[in-house]
Image (cartoon, rainbow over all chains, first blue to last red; front, side, top):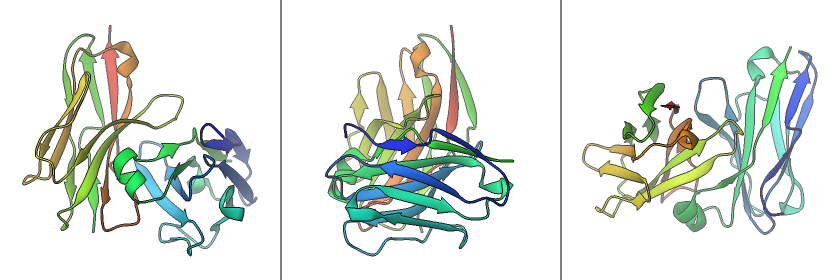
Length: 118
Length: 115
């Protein structure tokens, strides 16, 4: 697609429920990143996918968080048994190759999913 | 370790005036890249300007310029002739060239532009 697409745009869920957030990167981009932006905070790195390599999961805050990327394209971030502290904007980004392209152009971001846990 | 710090949670500027947003970073590596991103209410992050650490010349993009002080590990953003459309949250970020391309962000500065 022309840009990074994220869905849903907004999600309200009850505490304890599972949620899935979707990211559709730019076609041909091999690198995909998930970030979390809590109210008044910066962007916190969650997970990074690069081609067929094992993902860098070093930013996932707990085992309730997981992500997958199917066919090197669409990615889904899953949060199980949601807690109120999970309320945040979840941003996805992609870049062509994860290194030089990122160095030269940064990433292309989606508009994020605002998750509210009540 | 790689950290980025923005110490100004909020700034305001009068339309047509100049404002400087501060950013400091910490890394033990010598080769890295620095960025400023703008996040308007639409939440879409927009790349404003980029600086390569090995270049001494400060980057400039129209009304946006940086003051890169490598020894001090400082990377401030100057916005000249501020416009109402510049109102947004601004994030400073860095990537290490030895890394996989993972951007590390500061906490952000909310810029208000007064008419």
